[in-house]
Length: 381
Image 1 (cartoon, rainbow, N blue to C red):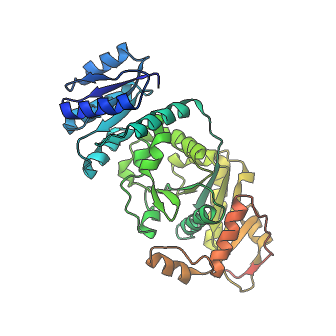
Image 2: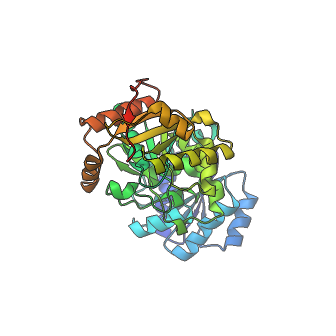
Image 3: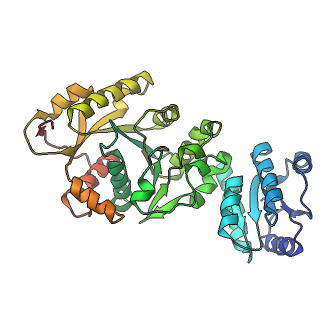
């Protein structure tokens, strides 16, 4: 790494151990140590005078108030400089607070020279390498309770499990997101944390996601955790996700909030999930009109009819006429099985009839199996 590492630490032991690890890592530039906490202005002046050569600032978080102020200064004033937190201990609350202040990494003894060297090398590679874009798929309900979250979750799991793709499921419903609850996850970080340091978001993904059976999940925050100014960075988060993952599945909220517009424009395909009930189909038609008003190409919007029964009624062509787009896929009514699975903190069994249907749909979503379902008829409830 050609750029310099700056260590800010009044702790002699921490500085000494970091210096030794960085020396053994054989970086191309010798680190600089600032042996006391500077003010934000002093640090800003120091980096400004050395901006071309400074690549990372490691801040000792032994004094959290002073340390987090400096990390925030690096984030706000020097987007190309990587802020790193370091501490003698590895307290969970310190790690979480450091990440939320904007730190890209958290280091604690024993410092591994090989790990540091690889970390900086990977960082340098990411600055120059452009990764191919993965498939971005949105699932949106015609109305709350239509099962869009259930379909999104099962499709994401099936793509990860059956198609062996690296998948990220994003719960983008800040008002009533339920993915983490359904899977009994207890995430330390949420989508709000992804918006903190979007200029280094590629490096944050391993830290801010939680994993469930090989599926990466970015949990939804509460609505009051996301400030309006940070919502302007949405595009950066989703662009990064699409370059880091083969498939990004986004569980959208029921309402089309302002924040949804940019996400929908980035999507390769939008699956509008409705039941065959009159009110759901009416609201599905309204959603289609709203998407058209947002200049979303209508060919990117696909209709999925969920909880289909066997009673005779409208066929797929009739439902397509009601909503304004043809029916792309249908999913059987197995509400009891889905509810039972969620009570256990899991998904419907893979070998069940519904599990197989959803796996087939996941293949269809990824363009792997172009299975065509026969036309069915239903009766409105």
